[in-house]
Image 1 (cartoon, rainbow, N blue to C red):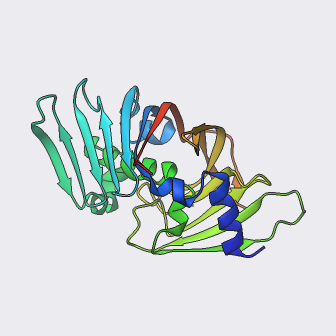
Image 2 (image 1 turned 45 degrees about the horizontal axis):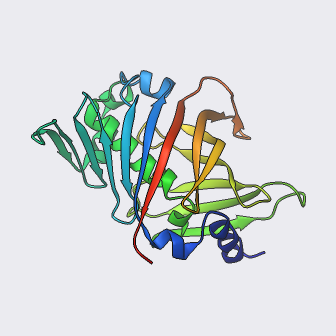
Length: 245
């Protein structure tokens, strides 16, 4: 099976291209935490939020961010926090550039947290269709055994807001996502992670991964270490707004 044929099967298993093109917005309830957030002084920033993702427009909104009624707004080039009267509280342009500072190794402010959450949610809820975005090149490795997971290696260029330029997706025999490997560059070049997909749900004909846990990958063989839980993610009450056919 070629890379293109494998991508075709994965996309079909997640609802198909035509259905995805009709998506206007994805809404859900989000709670997330873990060692990676606590280590940057933001342990509770993503608890009990309502999110809206515009996958084609690359926009994410986090409602009840910072305070009840407030909103965090993400786009690749700008993040904003607005209060319950829609008054601008804080904003940052070119937010990714700040992560190279030494202070960012140990402390994120709310705008840093918003940037990380925004691009991560956009990536996760856009899988596998993000693999066909201009600027992404995908190659497939044959599994060692017939019933073993396949691996897709994706190379993302700088136009894609994502974790790292090279990422690996582990796909089971039903063409569903088991695991997503990457380096969280905004944390550090050493932040090699394995994002395990533990549960999924089909909504409006599309498949979404609703429970994830992220663990470190370490050593020459990049072995997954089941401690600490770097990030955990729970999505509930997913709804999809579709354009008229």
